[in-house]
Image (cartoon, rainbow, N blue to C red):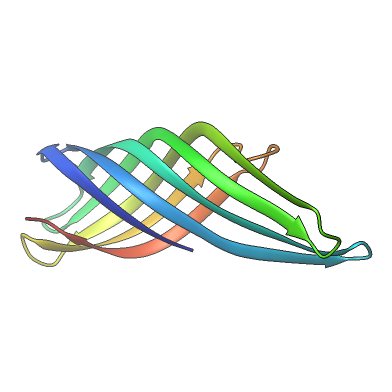
Length: 129
């Protein structure tokens, strides 16, 4: 899985982000054959940040997503679907410089598909300009 985002920092403690997450592909094998699930989502979130130390901060995010996913199996069954829902997450940020930071983040996408929640852990780089 991977994701990319862009945003606008309103002030030191609040920003808005628009992102794209590719959940990758999962394969399940059982007595009925093999099933494959692929998915991705666009999200729009508000991010609240709280500085903990000179370069460390903790943040939370809350917003909405639009997900698309496809399920197929070796028997020829295929289904595509889209879903809208709630996404939220928490993370830690370390600022290397004024324009470069690293983020460790957990984000959940609620009820993507048939009551399936997707959680994503990521380690990323943040460029500010």
